[in-house]
Length: 257
Image (cartoon, rainbow, N blue to C red):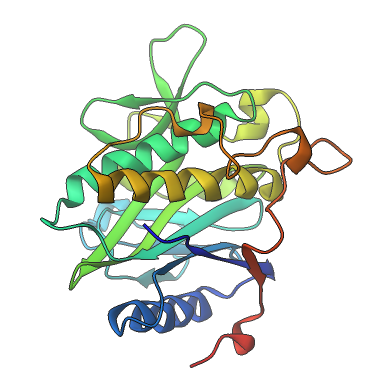
């Protein structure tokens, strides 16, 4: 698949503005003006409810909730969490379940890049960090998608260094018998959103390449290619960085309508 445009939004992107940005980028893909884009951002604190949200999932403190057209149930977004929205046309025949599995692998490979082992849990989407006793798992990465006319919106969220208090007021993703965690907790060090964004971008591209060629990714972030962060692609502080020339750093008003 042609290389995605990486749209890195600095600061905090209001959730409604993020929805509008996705719709504009989606229109470009539908019209053939763009091969696709990957939005990388953080949102101010907000609860969002997918189509399967139940009344018992909602905030116990009465906090407002934004209803959205993605799959899944209720979740939280906020500072310290990376949200990635791949706005892309999926290969035909359409297989949304396969795309969810690829995004799970994106999450697993990206967190491996910061030294954290995550895995799938049977019957539950996302990426999960096993507890030391392996008796249970804590969720570190979530997936919620909308696909219409073969083009995706919404995407994935990875807890990097965010507070976890907001999750206490809801039933995250409708799962009452498991916890949530962050990469910083799991890694035992401060893991920044920028560090993880640089790991997510090339693995999403690899997932799309695999979907369009019929070769599913298994461990894309462990391959060697110019699109994967190497020592030459790291900042002076040692963090991966998004490669110049592939990235458009933008504020919402700069994105053409």
